[in-house]
Amino acid sequence: MRLVVLGGPGAGKGTQAERLSKTLGIACISTGDVLRSAIASGTELGQQVQAKVERGELVPDEAMIQFIRDRLLEPDVTQGWLLEGYPRTAFQAEELDFLLDELNQQLDKAIWLEASSEVLMQRSLSRGRMDDTPDAIQRRIELFQACTTPLLDYYRFRDRLIHINSEQPLEQVEQQILGILGLAN
Ligand code: AP5
Image: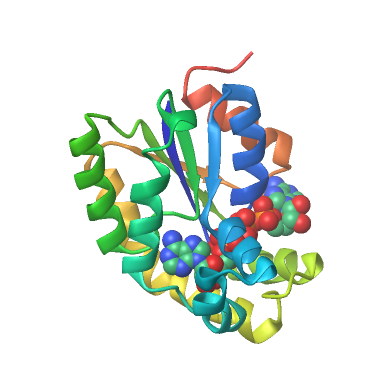
């Protein structure tokens, strides 16, 4: 199974990705976690992206595309994966499709977790990460609306989009996703 999880900051992407990757037995690749861990370890990538992540700005497409290209060639993901927080721009989505063609793989579904801006703000503030300041969250909400929502049509047009109301309790969100994937208990 190959899945991507889309949604604004605090929509529950990380929460659901972790649950689904355990349930489905596939690797979860979270670009936000990878970047935060690179920043914490002070790697070259971390130093390059720190200011952008702290301000809630997107990291340049080229860096993210190269990272995913390298990551999807690793042996632990040959049987499936779940991408959390990627793609986030039309360019990233197109490049992912090119990469999957090259690898002779197909994306099964793009899961869109929808929540209002108020819920996104409130959930992100309650978490208190280094990039969870009100200004940075607001910027991430704006960038989600401007850069990522066009991907919803991109995947809808390809008959890949699953739309979930992520304001429901998280167990219900997971059950609904599994139900649509035909994997509910
Ligand atoms: P990233 O970490 O992906 O940040 P984000 O998209 O802003 O999403 P969050 O991690 O804030 O939220 P989430 O949807 O995972 O919600 P969570 O499950 O934690 O990216 C960080 C930064 O990295 C970006 O700003 C950017 O700079 C850079 N970046 C990353 N990917 C990039 C890319 N592809 N291109 C360019 N730049 C990139 O849930 C939030 C809270 O809500 C938790 O406390 C949780 O317990 C709670 N919660 C979740 N679901 C529910 C529910 N159903 N009911 C009640 N509470 C819930």
